[in-house]
Picture (tube, rainbow, N blue to C red):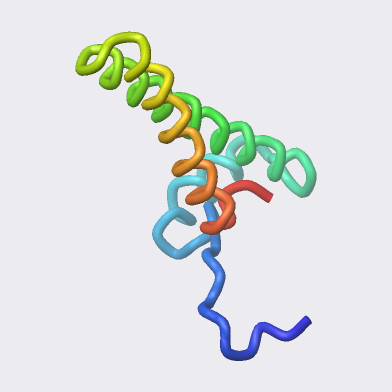
Length: 90
């Protein structure tokens, strides 16, 4: 399947902006290959969960328990799509 005519994909945690931090950290721990991917996927999952919980708390404080549920679900889906499209989860 050709990528011609489509917008470029995100580079995830290995982009030029993220490489100095995660590259240095992963070099210190000697993580490579499958273990590196699993580690970075866990970081992505933590990002999704933390932002969804923050949105749930904000929704709860504004609109009660319905706002909490809606805030969690909306944030979870939006951040999840952002993570997948940016290639943070592979």
